[in-house]
Image (cartoon, rainbow, N blue to C red; front, side):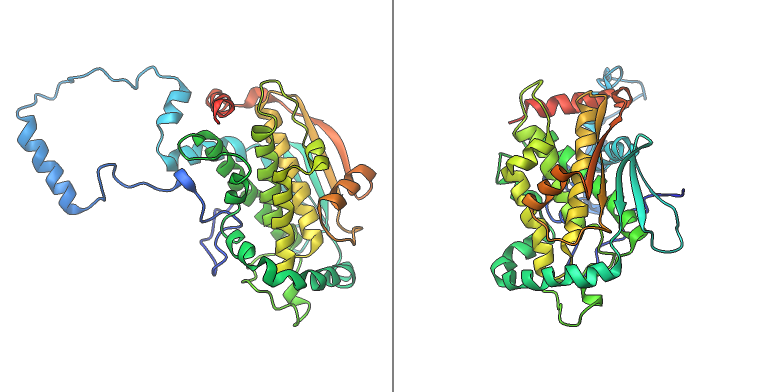
Length: 365
């Protein structure tokens, strides 16, 4: 089966921006020259100042390097933002792959693998099922549009702030938590976009003139929802940090979903708001929730040094219901349209610096 690679982000379309977190990079944004903005005047001034202060230099070294012999974690800590993102993304994203039978037309089934093991298998809903069972849910959700409008607008470009309201997050105090969370969001984008392409399910507005979304419909397929994938992945990752922080504490996303902790409640609301807005069906959110939880759970288990994680199958071709946490939990409990199994993973592949970064996260507020 062909494996879809990651083409990179194609820029920002319309006012939608990135799939859920474009505008909220925190300390992860780009910084210019530490002493001020770069310019030809600055370069000229620095050159003249150097010439006026150094005097004669014979080209021999005048200091001992503090870089030679340092650990990989010390080297990563010293990286600038862009190269740090690059090494984090390579280490994390290379664990996952997207596989479809066909690259010519829309697929009925697709898989996301983790360390070459089947992790998430998705079965696409048929268009007739969407028309007859999903559009009515979208119509009912539209009654909430003006109650949810402010949230919907913010969530088009920022979902992180809703999680930051649950527990303390700061670019200074929780630097590595935020860096890894952003890496999880980027991972979701690199996986969900090829998955959306492979399934190519039409958006709601292509099925009814009356949908008329209150935000720009994104220029890619509907299934699964990117916002649901990212928000449930973020909630899963942060549940390990905020709720299961103590060393050796059990990490059980299934239990956290059943308890409906505050992170998952926000993820649920973010996902539902996409249906309220008129750009997603409930089944999109169900698929995204399964994908996001399972991917983040696998990553956290690997970082925790565990040797197994949960794999899930979602039969979107059989599901005709709405979406919320209670319905998600009911489907997991029934082991019918969402089924679970266990797959083996190998934590020995985690780079030493990433292990040290994960340990640093455990010490943050």
